Length: 168
Image (tube, rainbow, N blue to C red; front, side, top):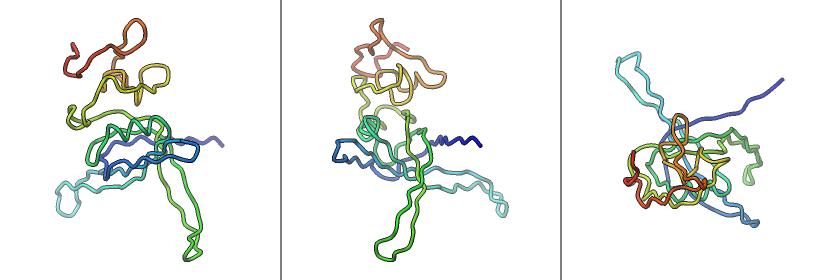
């Protein structure tokens, strides 16, 4: 039987992303994400929000870039897969497990440059084949679904110092 493991989330960071490195110098960025479910309360008839808290890990250069541009409270859009860790508790000897998301791609969402902590077009690009999630050489609202890729004839991002200087 075939399997499919894909997760797409958009929410707010519950803490600043934490960046660490393995002994082999692989970056590991860990973050907490709150995703709200909005529903109408059947008793009172009022709208309510119920948060779901998700632990997320991003590996490599994408994790380094995420940590650089995101802070607690900011919105983010992530795409990845579910993983399950299992281990034995050292104190009690009981088996423990934890379900989390390993993000493979991400995009900027939300407000302007203040929310992104000084977004810069000169940030390193780590996209797959030009344009896409986590590609900082293109317009943060573009190159994703329905967006446009802003590249020069050489394939490199244009030299724009400020997002506000973008001609569209």
